[in-house]
Length: 483
Image (cartoon, rainbow, N blue to C red):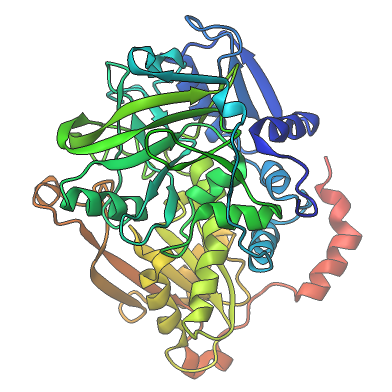
C-alpha cells in the first residue's frame, strides 16, 4: 500500500474521518426531504463535516446514506494520505505529483468479497430496498447514482471505463437510467453498442472506495482504465469480482452495485435533475433504460451521495483539486512554457471559470495559454471563461483574479472569443430551440489579464509589500488577527 494511504475501502476511510472529528452521524432524517435539504446546507457551509444518515424512516437500521464526504481539504488529504495543513494549491499539486510518480496497476480478480454478502436476481430485484434520497425538491425521481460510478467496456478495444454519470431509478425498482453527455467515454462505449443494435453492458456502483470515486469523476486520457490509476495511487491492485451477467469488473468491497444492460430500443422519460451548473438545465427527455439483472450489496450497506447543487458545492470543491493539476499538465504537454499555476474555480463548477498564471516569455504567450486551456481535453467540455494572469496572482484566490481582470485587461483588446465549442444539455445558456435541434455548443472567452507584454516593465507597480516584507510584517503584527 502506498505510504500515507492508511485505509482500504469506504468503511476504513470513514473510520479515519471519524477519528479526525470530520464525521457527523444523523438519525431519523427522511429520504423524501430531509437528507437532500441537509446535504444542500452542508454543501454551502465551508468546513462542514461529512454526514452519515441512519435510522431512516421506512428502512432497517444500518441501511445508511453518506453525504458531503469530500467537501473539505482534511478529508481529501485523508483520501490521498497527505498532510492536512497544506494550502489548496499545495494539496492539489501533491495529489498530482503522487499520480505522476505512481505506476499504473491493473486490477486483479478474486472469487469472493463483501459485495457478495447479498445478491438479488430475478423477482428479488428491487432498488428501492435502499433509502435513495430525493436530492432536490424539483427532481422528477430518486437518483441512486450521484456519489459512485458506472463501469462500461469498449466493445472494439476491450478497455474498461469508470465514469461518474447520473443514474435515476425507475418506479418499478427493476430498471434505472444511464444519462451520459455526448463525448464522454461511457457515452462513446454505449454508442458503439447501440450502433450495432446491441445492448450495452453496464454496472452502476453506488458506494465504494473514495479513490475509485474520484478516479471515475476525473478526466483521464481515453483508453486508460481508472482502476489502474487508482491502484497506482494506492500502491496495490484493486480487487474485483466478475459480474455474473456482464462479465464487467466489480469492486469486491463495493457497498451497492447494480448490474445489467442498457437497451437502445427501451426509452423512457428521464429527468429533470438539479445539475452541477446550479440549474435544471437539461429538462427531461427519452433516455435508454438499464434492465437490472442483479443487485449486489453488503450487509448494512452505505449509499454514497454526491448530488450536484448550486456551485460552489461539494462536487465543484473536490473537482477543483482533481482537475486543476490535470489542466496544468495538459498545458505543459502542449508546449506552453512557464505555467506557474492553474485553478478550476469552484464558483464555475470547476469548469466554467479557469485561471491560469504564467510568467510571460514572449508576445502572445498569454493568448496561447488561454486558447489551449479552453480547448484541451480537460478544459474543453462546457467551459466558459479562461483568465490568464501574471505569476504574482494567486489563482486560487478569486478576488485576486478578478482584481487582475479589472486592472490589467481592456475589454476592447484583451478578450478573444472561441465559437462552437463542446457543450452539453446541462448548459443553461443554450436556448431550448438549440437543445431541441442538437446544437450543443457554446462560446468561450479568453481574457488576457496579464500586464501588456510590450510595455509590461512600465506597468504601474502594485502597492503591496514584497513577499519577504510581508512575511516580516506578519511575524511582527500577525497577533492583531487573533481573536
